Amino acid sequence: GESVGLHLPTLSVQEGDNSIINCAYSNSASDYFIWYKQESGKGPQFIIDIRSNMDKRQGQRVTVLLNKTVKHLSLQIAATQPGDSAVYFCAETPYGNNRLAFGKGNQVVVIP
Amino acid sequence: EPEVTQTPSHQVTQMGQEVILRCVPISNHLYFYWYRQILGQKVEFLVSFYNNEISEKSEIFDDQFSVERPDGSNFTLKIRSTKLEDSAMYFCASSEGPDWGNQPQHFGDGTRLSIL
Image 1 (cartoon, chains in turn brown, red):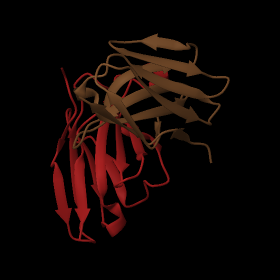
Image 2 (cartoon, rainbow over the protein chains, first blue to last red):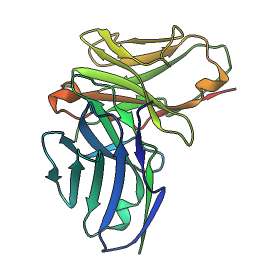
Image 3 (cartoon, rainbow over the protein chains, first blue to last red):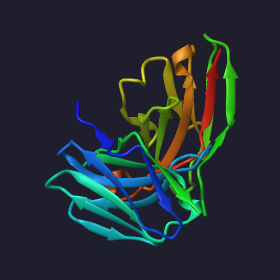
């Protein structure tokens, strides 16, 4: 079946460096993509979203890039801080659908 | 900042018993959702709810599951006769509109359901 998945299980990054988290999706009908951050014992926290008519969107210290040609999504975190340590999920949904399909998650560990 | 709240944070129930998980969505949101996350696995969609009815449900959401919005603020998930495999973290979420309306889903911190 079609699914959303992450390339790397764990990313260790030095504090102050930039982080890049990747996500591959296979559902060509996907229209809307979201990145969530999940800290231990908490629910997924919305970070940033992007629609399929865009290829880049920026937030505070975060940038999401979407490459529809290769069905690839990435999250860039600038100047990574200890508070960025968490599991990051990408999620997607097709147009007209409100069911989010989540990837498995990618652990980011920030080294002080 | 408004947030989705869930109670209880942890529920322990005997197999075969009924359980009700409670959620208070963000007040101006119109769409409500339940997801679950079995330990070590992906977050999985269960059901979405709008205008007092289910708008979509997954294959997980069988006849043992039901949802209700009993008043203007609460949104509940009931599992009628729990099974061991229902043990998971259950997340409630809400959004102003469906995702195709460019409105993200905001999640609560979950209820950990443990079936003995």
